[in-house]
Amino acid sequence: MITILTRRIISLIITLFAVSLLVFSVMNLLPGDPAAIMLGTSASPDTLAALQKQMGLDQPLPVRYLAWLAGVFQGDLGNSYTYSVPVLGLIVERLAVTLPLALMAVVLSVAIAVPLGVTAARHRNGPVDLLIGLFSYAGIAMPAFWVGLLLILLFSSSLGWMPAGGFPGWDAGVSAGLKALVLPAVALALAQAGVLTRVARTAVIEVMNEDFVRTARAKGLGEAAALWRHAVPNALIPVVTMLGLQFTFLVAGAVLVENVFNLPGLGRLAYQALSQRDIIVMQNVVLFFAGLVIIMNFLVDLAYLVIDPRLRAKAQ
Amino acid sequence: MARILCRPVLVAGLVITLALVAIALLSLVWTPAVPSKMQILLKLKPPLAAGLLGTDHFGRDLTSMLMVGAWNSLSTALVAVALGASIGTMVGVILAARRGWAEVIVMRICDIIFALPPILSAMMLGAFLGAGRFTAILAIATFMVPVFARLTFGAALQIWTRDYVSAAVGMGRSGIAITFTHILPNISNQIIVQVTIQLGLAILTEAGLSFLGLGMPPPAPTWGRMLADAQTYLGQAPWLAVLPGLAIALAVLGFNMLGDGLRDLFDPRDRN
Image (cartoon, each protein chain N blue to C red):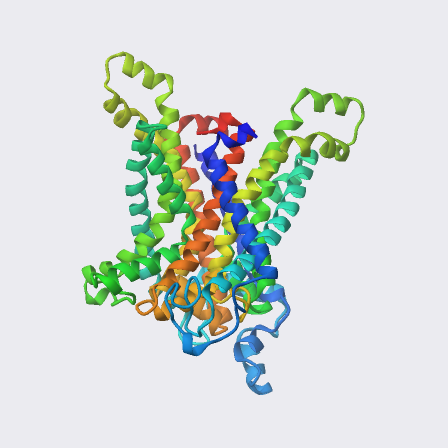
């Protein structure tokens, strides 16, 4: 296990380095001077030269890359040009919104998908299965940002039960903060739940046909007990894997949903950085998101190895 | 034909997709009104009060905008998926034929590209290249390359282990010839299914990019930007937020159902 873990960690580090190189290359090799893009066309040559120097653009590319990387390791991501504050502080501040939002969405999607998937598997090919199948199709097809708009329309504009957007901050109390995140989390969770329901259904059907479940039932275990004691715990493995694979889409969804609900999260920060041409912030936020996706996939991979001894043997 | 008709998912997918394509093509030659024509006196009219589906905040005909939006969305998605699928498939089948160290490196590159959601890639590209259809296509296609490279690599590897391929190798046929005569025809069904499903994903991504202002620039109507504009008038004109979203959802639903239906048709064992 230690050998596999070492190998996976080395692979993770190489991938993270490669991602940093890719993000840096896109930001620095594409046509256009980042300093000129940030300052716009009206900037004086002196201001431009000063910013170029501040950003280290007068240095050769490899030196700039290594300097950026060294900064990343030391927690110095540079200063935001727009906000004039350290980028790391900005990311940490915005993460306090995005992280709970993503977590709520994940918990909600699993809470919706697993019972629905199990129910669909139990009533396979019947009308209930068909209805759940339709929900699943709808969940996948509806863009999260549109679901967000519909939720605002219903729960904020019409019923007035929920805030239409904005975030009061955690200082206003945990319940006020969580209340502001409920609708965005539901919007994000529905799309995830659509995919996960299908995975859970398929996994339960497959496990119910396995020999050990058949044996358990032959020994007198009831249908429901066999389902909840054997099929569901085993079916959770592909659900967790899919959750990891879907993380990229959760990140993409968060960028859009945060903009719909005007939430001061990382996705909105990336969007604002784009509008304000704050290249330094964008470069670091994109690296942060990509790193998060890679680490998430690594953790799922690892969880899979821990749960399933057959995969451990195969990997060795 | 009977094999198709007895599959409701496939039929539903086909009907929705064909209707979408028909509307998109029709918009090239006819729309009920000029989609960019502003009629301020008729602004924010609900469905049937002015035109079939009402008007937006500039008094533009919503039906016409949705029709042209269908073409804009579909054509962007088609070009992006065609580009991503072609490059990805080429990479996948070449790797399967050659194997070796390149396989490890390319698959790692695929992991890296996969870690960047197209929305973020488009934001990065948009900062330098400017927002527009080209940026959207480039971002979506880049994300599609690893999807097709992985799929075709895995599928091609399976075909390479078949006896008839070993026989062709024994007869001295080159890797390229075997790839074209045996590998590609045998994995084409899987590619077709994946293209269909990815078209849905591409439409969804294009809508997201347009929503953020990274898609086609105004005045070209796109479903995503129509939704972004609708945000301001949510209380006054809810249909502006409902209809473009419904169009996106239906289009994605159609392609997903078509993909599932085709998979079922090509390989009924995969039904679950």
